[in-house]
Length: 115
Image 1 (cartoon, rainbow, N blue to C red):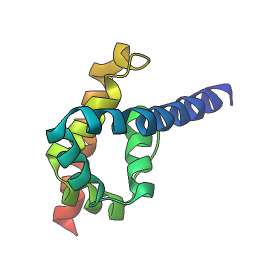
Image 2 (cartoon, rainbow, N blue to C red):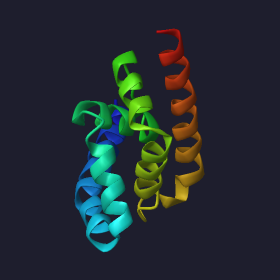
Image 3 (cartoon, rainbow, N blue to C red):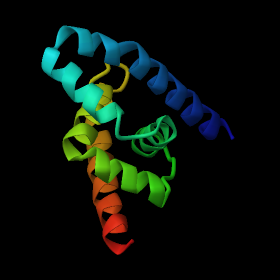
Image 4 (tube, one colour):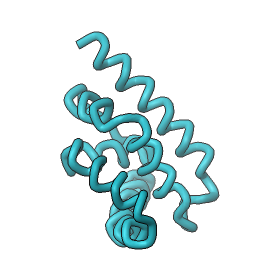
């Protein structure tokens, strides 16, 4: 139970940090702003949270969210996860998160091909 609570707390911290830091990246980097504006239009907030939950926790993702993720595109997915994993609190596990990011992408591509 403590592990679940700890993972849930970490997930909420990640979401809060994303909300806090993504606008900062968008303001400072014109190219990043365009990328974020483009990416955020392609995916629902619930699916974005599910993706974050899978990569940074032990969450699950639905086939519908996989479809949205593939529609969003690999560049958007990679950029979002890379920005989050670069946050000082998470950077120690960045390699693990980037592997989970790539595994999720592979899973979602396979799901959309069979649908």
